[in-house]
Image (cartoon, one colour):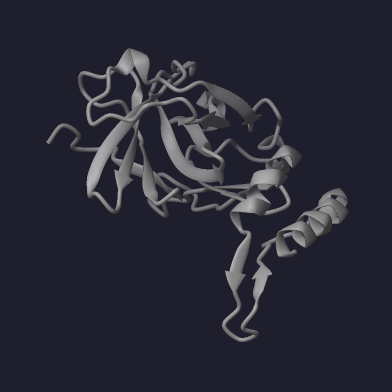
Length: 219
């Protein structure tokens, strides 16, 4: 086996394929892999994601955690270091797109590295400061609600070197509204026997726009 540890950390579905985020760089690679499993064909292909260089005074490593699809070939991913407290420096949410990326079983790495965009730096934005406590090491859960709200949660480990605390962060990213609503668009209600639109959450100032978008989808 090429990778014995630090395997799948995030799994998402897009366009009939399963996308998986590997936590750390494989031996022989420069960047960490995103794996794409074609469920119908039963085949794997890969692209590469550029990790940040460790910045902590304590060293350590930087890797990926959870991954979620936004639709339209766009994804959000958690990038973090393995440090906590005053040693922690990287707890971030990034986005990337797979547009114009050609997937191959063993792609030339220099040609398959995606571009990423910073969405939220939880340390710089002082999200942790609002808790009144230390920065927890493992932010490992990520979800996007239909109104553009992003949720991030930590893995509390429940082991001797962790206090077991669970923190759920919530912040807004309105431009996600277009694709997230389209993602949860139509389904046939088994009780009503008619097509409708499922939206997990309508939030604050996006409410009226959400209603308009839903009306368009239902029509």
